[in-house]
Length: 263
Image 1: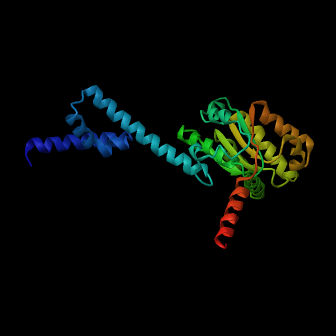
Image 2: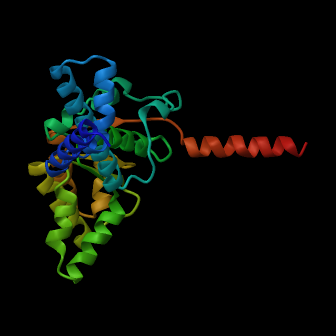
Image 3: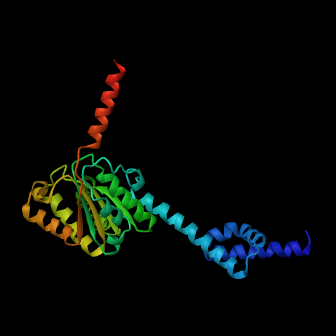
């Protein structure tokens, strides 16, 4: 090895060591390649520095988004591009597309998706949650039943405050499938605590098959149902979807195709 080559190698090592100490992981790993690119494209010092910082920011963004999606616990990844807008007989498409801009999260607003089962409420809620993760917004997905079960169980081992923080700390909480099972007193009190606390911490996306007038049946207490509905709608948007169940439609098509095969 010549003296100049050794000096160059030492310079590389020193820069990599400094990058690692500053937690510039992407820069440390790709520094040699960046230098070669700079030489090949004849980049100025300023352009080289911009390239280094841009690559580092892009790498960190990708890592953060991947972690946020993982921690959101979506049942599956859904995007707005995959949604079938033609299936519902009535759906406020412009309102939903505007929600994807995430202004409502910045304003600590809420979205309530209302419609019968099989109309894509969960798909749309998940797609907005996925977009929120892409925008570096901490998000959590849960069903109403799972959230209540976890909260009730936490009272047994005295971890209620910790579990409440789980549902109240993310900037966006998605609560799916409210209304399929009635809540007892303990369940409705805990649900009320989450909604009440979230008015101070962030946004809620709620999917339900029950209109507000029927929430008394869900919570088995008209006063609590009214209090929860008022907190959500005060700074929220109701998104009503109408039509027949996509699942029923798909099953009928499948049965029709099967019947055709037997003819």
